[in-house]
Length: 210
Image 1 (spheres, rainbow, N blue to C red):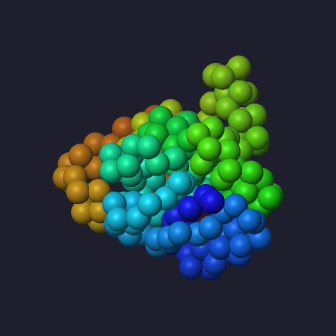
Image 2 (tube, rainbow, N blue to C red):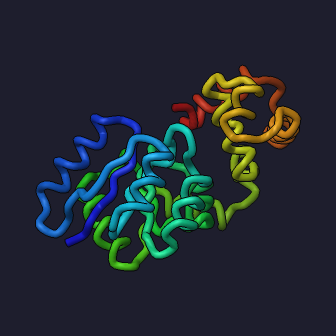
């Protein structure tokens, strides 16, 4: 039996996932978490075969949370379950230690197959994202500006788009205001954008906004 830990900040999504898993005979939901702290608590105290992790978790989330989980339980496979159909995000997740990346827009039946594959020690990547990654590799000159950002810059980009101020981002990420401002300046230059309004328009155009 595959013991699954579901991590998503939306209760309705967790319920939907539990109903999907209930239709199988070899997977059971052994735990659930609604934010980064709960994920780490569950990982430290529970016994799981797979963590199904939403990329955009409150408190600690994304790439940073993947790293913290792997530091606690290096052998625990992580399957990312994300609304972001971005090759850049998938690449960052794999570099951080994830073993799979699944898009929320894909067929739910494929998610069950992905859970089985990753929990068994394999790797999985959503076919649509795999195609995008192959295209990006073949034509690197056509990469979108946001794919040039570092993981930290992309994290700050998303927080700015979500309406967070420099001070709020600094508190959330536990870094100084000056560091956030430097990252903000760098990402603006890389993306050739002038202000946060431009960032928001870009995020909406490329479906990067929550």
